[in-house]
Length: 352
Image 1 (cartoon, rainbow, N blue to C red):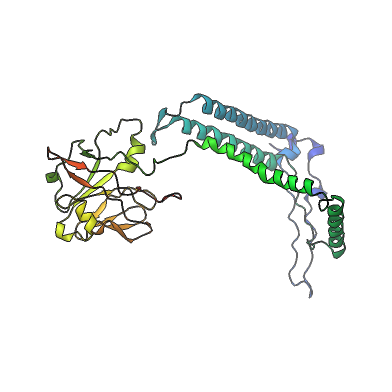
Image 2 (image 1 turned 90 degrees about the horizontal axis):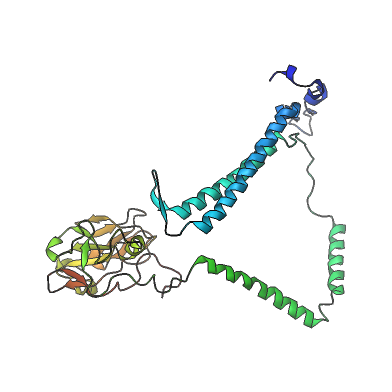
């Protein structure tokens, strides 16, 4: 748009474009003050039609935010918790989480974008300089504030009206407890779910890759295998929840090389069964050093000595990997003789 299309009364004057005052350097102030740069007018300052376009843009962004908020509420009410949707590059994810994240993100982004566009195109952009001054109050003001406070405390008669004082303190102390009710929306308490897995006495150890029960001969010295409990299928609704606790790591070590007495007793012919879940932040352990019998977590390099009760020898993990006691049933398949000896994964605040 050229200046010929802008009304003459809206064109900048010489006063508008003059630079700010400049102070020269002297002995007291050795650095010259360059002053403010000349003010540059925006197209919205000169043309009301451009300002109207910016106004409509801001209004559109705010309207999009309102629609996205309505979509957030509708998604929360109508989409089932257990429904899933396929998103390219992400795979199958929760439809509810995806809808809530998208609508909330759009609502927040539209508000922010509208506010920024409003400020940059329509609000005043004149730069104003102000001299710095002390921010603390003067002694007179401080004295007056303290006098007013003492006078107000005296007039409140809290010292003499103890019944009012005590009931007020009680009301203020009790009122925040109403917020505890909101914690119900966090879901049911976990109970003992964090302490228990699907492993129990008689559960067969099933190969994660072949879905076939494992025999001792399937685990050779120096190898690392992964197993899951019998009856847990990857197509089950709660598969991810259960496998996150029950994933098992099997390693076979010569019995003479097993240092920990309990680990040897809970093994079968040198086959040790440990939780695959790292005790730091819950990453799956999958790296094994055959010569040293060390298992390494790829996330933060926590290292466990599988020949010594899976104790931590390096890294941020807080405790050893839980061990599963195993044996062989009458048909020659490896089976669990109970659950893990302690909760799997990272520690939690109420862990005993």
